[in-house]
Figure 1 (cartoon, rainbow, N blue to C red):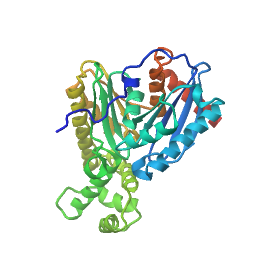
Figure 2 (cartoon, rainbow, N blue to C red):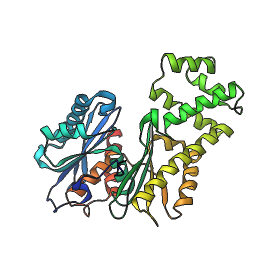
Figure 3 (tube, rainbow, N blue to C red):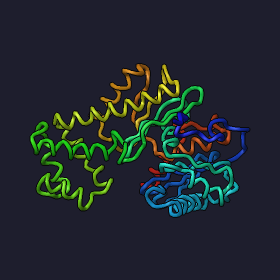
Figure 4 (tube, rainbow, N blue to C red):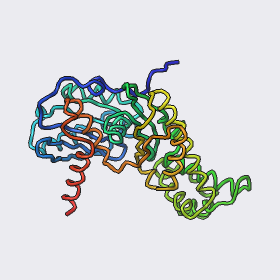
Length: 344
């Protein structure tokens, strides 16, 4: 069996070359629902944004995904009032089980300085500033990725909702339905999920939910959205809902442990919790912190509030050999200032 890392850092990011004298870099965050491109002006500390539709080829196909990515990129470049050649580097972090096809299409029409990576790499850069550490992702799906002090990478999980995605919104949704079914047939403990699950889907009984799952069927996103009810009940003290979050923490903790073993991470390093799943707050974050502390007592486990595109920008800056020019915290500040200005 192949034992190499499932996700590697491209050479331009793992070992940045000579310093490139440039004013502009671009980062892109491409996902299953939308795409955001950001051109960062390193001189004025400003960003210029472009938007596109879904760019996960698993969801929309490679052609549509590339179209969304390049469309968002060109919009951001236009907003900045520059040409493509003015970019020192561009990093496209794209959600997909395999980004090789996307990368091949991008190379056909864009310079070699445009690099495509899996979105877990962007999440890691957002969580760690592209330094040694781990990103643990829980959204609709889940994934864990880390880089050790020697540059070794490792990804654990991320096998999709049929074969994996443990501790994700989808996983919590499915497990919540299962818990309600076990309550219904008396093979498991009583739980408020038995009433909350059918009510969430506008149905009269848990039996109707089963019929809906098999005959409609409910989408991955619809099932993942159910996790908000699991959180509500956990916050209210429902023992079964609380146990689900504790199980989720153990599942994610096992994946984090695998990443630590394979990358050689030890001592003090960040473990960034990335994604909408962690909006559940203490019912999810505290069990994960406890699990990680058992295996890495000095790890800094924290939720990541920074926009994902910040990680792509950090990597683009790094690819230009300009990591000393701006930090992840500064990039986050620029993005936040831009967001606040647009809302005012």
